[in-house]
Image (tube, rainbow, N blue to C red; front, top):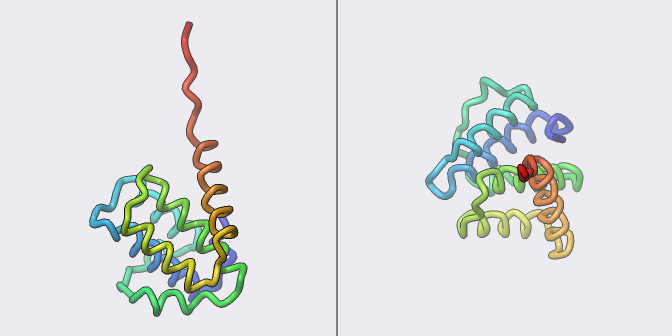
Length: 129
């Protein structure tokens, strides 16, 4: 959604971070894989190969509030794509939150916003009478 606004080094760092989170539970779901491919396309990084950077090395690439907001927003979309929020994903998000300096209310607002977007993207079941 907003990834095109990131600078080149931030784009690559974001892709590294997204791949790390998508694989953190040891299970890359079809939904997560689809979103990773969407990210690559959006950032014009279809040929980028994940190098496996450490979390600390990745996070130091995001210096502005805007880029941090973009990263957190997009990561929530990825995390909730498979409908499961694992303990490992939660711990990783908490690390990112602390590194970026988000307070709890700001963090909760992002999370709620992404959940609402996810609800809107799922077609409503219509009863047939």
